[in-house]
Length: 331
Image (cartoon, rainbow, N blue to C red; front, side):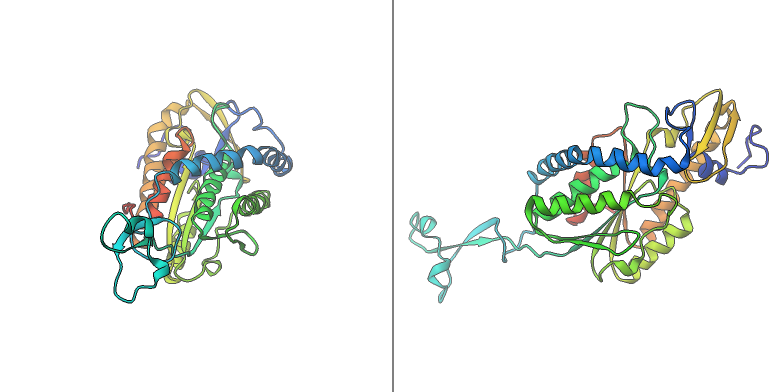
């Protein structure tokens, strides 16, 4: 691709890495904050927001759970599936006498199978997530936390075992009502307050064999690192779902004129005159990066879902739930 004249010597790969992960100082009020103050301020803000995020997550999970369809086979569980005629030798305790009284035959009430399994969740704690392009939008990290909590609430409600992947040891969250969701929220808050300079992805060894994994982040890390993670999960074997949470400005570069971009993860400050001149090159580089992520997921047998922070979180959670239930389509 032709290098834009206003960026001599810089290729499209740098556009993707530098611009997509930089904050335009002219657009973000706190972009001039000293890097050392960011972790403390972000942790305090997250702690203050967590109760409302938990409530929102419960509401979103309840909305999706209302349309939940089970595994459609008989087995141990609580949800009713069907009545069937009693077979010779059927224990009397299994007969549903109310239904049987309506006909001349005895009927058994069957519940739907509920096979609990482990679902591993990972929420990107990097400083790249602590950004938004406008005050009316949530931080990427806020959207990621909300969706992780909502998915956790839905999984715990269904009796699944949840494991949170962290920079240290993984945290297991057994089912247990509201207390379980609170434990997940606390573990998630501690993870997000971790050193933002540690941008490493989770290690496949934290994932149990045959588990399902949901990776929630902006996908703007290096492609080699993401490829190594997805290949490692395939080898476990484990099936992953990559949920990309991005600000709409990251795909469009909607700025114009003279703009100074300040890095969130130690990148050098970048000042551009006439940002609109490189917008086309940036969009092309961003689109290629997204296509490369989709190809990594497809070739390794995983799924990919995209969510923009200006969209309703219910849509992303519905897509997540459908994918985890086996009804999602491959990218």
